[in-house]
Length: 297
Image 1: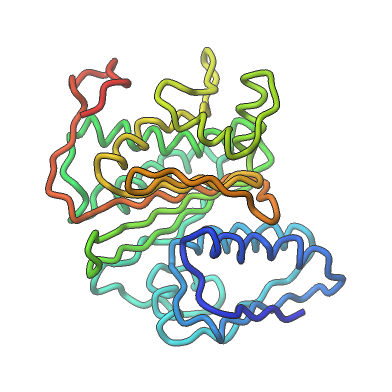
Image 2 (image 1 turned 90 degrees about the vertical axis):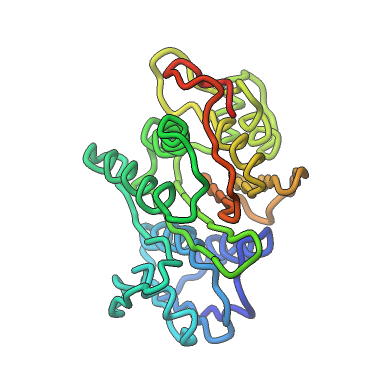
């Protein structure tokens, strides 16, 4: 079975649908070998490798053999720089301009990967030369909140790997840096509906989790989906946040939130965090104490 992408794939609602729609389309095929043809793709935002890798993982678990072919030079170069294509027989290319954020996958069942994931967030994101100046404590809290996604996948099981990747565009006005983290654990709708003891839609569940003070964490249970601090930081930083879980798509950008429904549900969560690196502000918690989780800036 050959699937040929018709055009570019970007970090937007249309781009997410193109990739997620592959899962039911390919799963219905009786053919074992699946060839993804990129000959018409002249721009592929490299952070989306995290989603593509997750989809390939799902298909391979269902007995499919997936091959990637016909990359144009520009796309192939960035996917070799971020090391996504290394496992497909391509050689590594050194990133002279440091615009790629490495593709990595982590095993939530392996305790060693806890530290590896935290180090990844610190090294590939917070330690980036142009990343907005921030206090060490705020950096710690941002890392811990991103780690909530990782913890959720581990706590609720059914997730073999967590995939992460990113890309930095220093020549654009906002110098955006995208980091995309994907898991196939329990989704937002399941988590929040269970916590509230009522059935709510996927987009409403995501929106609920973004509100200050809302978390599904109880007692010593980890993985509470408390993402409000990251949301606050991105609001002040004039960045963007996108969450896809089940059939829900939720985005905040420039003071406006957007909610949409996907053609096909994604059995897990995709979180894309876009930071504005054209930002000379210094960020810190209002009071630099370990107990102050609620007061930001």
